[in-house]
View (tube, rainbow, N blue to C red):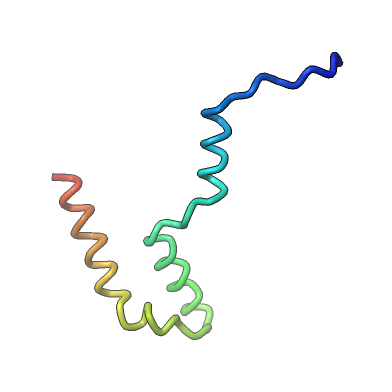
Length: 67
């Protein structure tokens, strides 16, 4: 071991920072919330009220993206 630091890779460092600060995708949030509900836990009130509209909007965007 020479004691020299390994070469600095800026792209790799930026990508690692993005992964650490990433927000979960909305579909994952909805799926997790649905799983929690199936386990008998109380649902989030906001998702209870807006979940179907959010899911419809996601599907709308997916269909537009695939066209």
